[in-house]
Length: 300
Image (cartoon, rainbow, N blue to C red):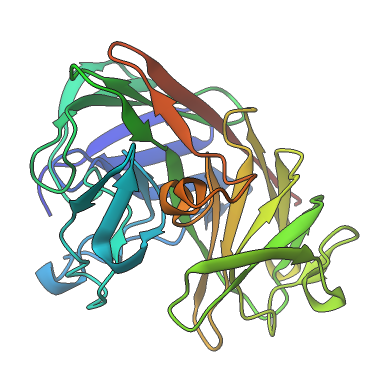
């Protein structure tokens, strides 16, 4: 792994690898004689074949999730995108930001700003992306932005993709209206009422949920509890990140809670007239930004 940037404030520490897709490699809370990993830590050393899927958190820009068949339909045109080499599937996945180096634009003890110029490799439109991570005494604040730097309209999306440790009794609490169902290729198919097995409104253990789905009508808050550790983490996302993707694969030692701006395959669904995808179109010079706060608590 290339050089790591470390931020510290009070009991919190976050490590980032700008050259490795602008990813977080560790986020920890220390206190009471304990050090608690709040994100799943990236292994050290990190095998090249596992990058970037083994990171603690990576950016989703200029879109999140899958684009079906690696073909983007937008404004009456079709664009061929590179299919995902990471997951060996025919779909495009998560954009460019998670795969390519970012540069440090500014840094001090408790904040780092990263920058990335994109377009032309895995995306047919030019854009500028930025991330900023700030530690306060009690939380990590992540900000992500994408700006259309081209001379034509561009579909755009953003999000963060953190990984968490799946303990046997890890539990989620969140409020949402409906859920996206998926087809055999893990592409969003249609919106449906939330079934009881995926109802997290009063808290539910993650084991057995087996999700790769997204919620709509999400109120922007999630609470993760680890009873074994006497710890919890509240995730609070801004209004531009109005969709939430949960990935809880069976038997895995991790799960993902992804605040994002749009559904999987949002641009193609919107081109077919499907409502509620969260698809955004940026005119030249326009920007889409989002903010997520991670607030940990630990009992003695």
